[in-house]
Length: 218
Image (cartoon, rainbow, N blue to C red):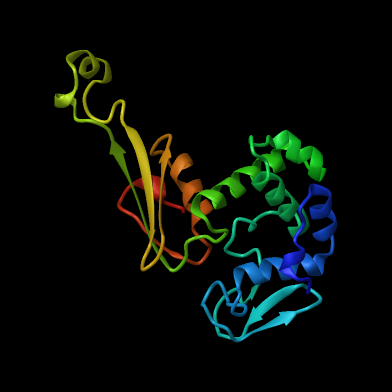
């Protein structure tokens, strides 16, 4: 394992440093599990590494005993290797004026669509300050935020109308005994809320919602 102090200072250095799959895997494992690998589904520490497949297997009795370092993180569900993810993270973190998905696509040799996916997941991790998803028991709800109509000037009150018109929709996710995440979403339809739940909550977690039909299938 390379010393973390050898971490690259340039883009060319990042490409070289993370080109070794073992170095890349060790780097991510050390960041995610500094005290030893833990099963992301049951929290157990009795696991073994399957070297040929580069995954771990939990010895506890439950479904989906095998897991990779990607499971339960922003990397999950992506066919891109950790080498490209790490270089993309380096690029985004070191771009003082931001960076476009087209620039990332050119640098990594991937499609703009894949680069857009990578860019948004990394920005999400920077906002939440973690690469992990919420797990265990997660409560999800949404609400409308905005001033009361009776407190508005007559002109604004007439323009916005009554009820939820003109108000922002804020979605909240609470991991019991853990983290809270909130964000503004464009609406309360299933096509908006369900993808957000899948983006923030790891597979196997128990999700509690109200009776809103938009959450069904999350």
